[in-house]
Image (cartoon, rainbow, N blue to C red; front, side, top):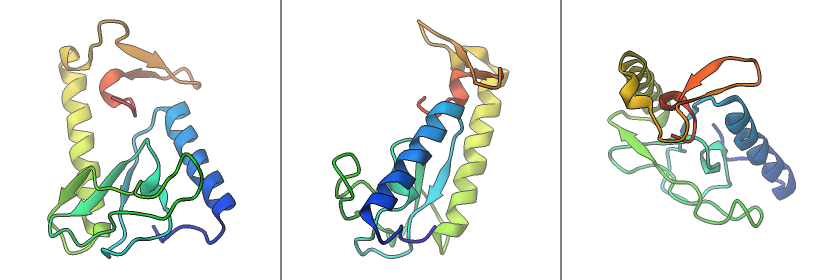
Length: 136
């Protein structure tokens, strides 16, 4: 995914747009961390609404420099790890596992319930069960 843009303002806009898109469209994004344990410029794994993927050996970025008051230092983190040599190999594994979990939830509606709301309708009128929502 790269290490982000060089300008803090542009990087902030990029990260906010990705968060907004994931939230608005209820899509699930898996994003690989950088294959280095150094502190990096913020990248898509710094946003709130993605699944940040690392490596089981721990050789991936763990922190980032601050961009603004929302995307502060340390926002990059692995949410899940998978056993492969590079995060470009681990990310598809986590994405596939996510798809299998969503498929399982579609087959068993009780896995996709919430006392207040069981589904939402996207801006394109697509019905999205809770199990496939970005924040669930």
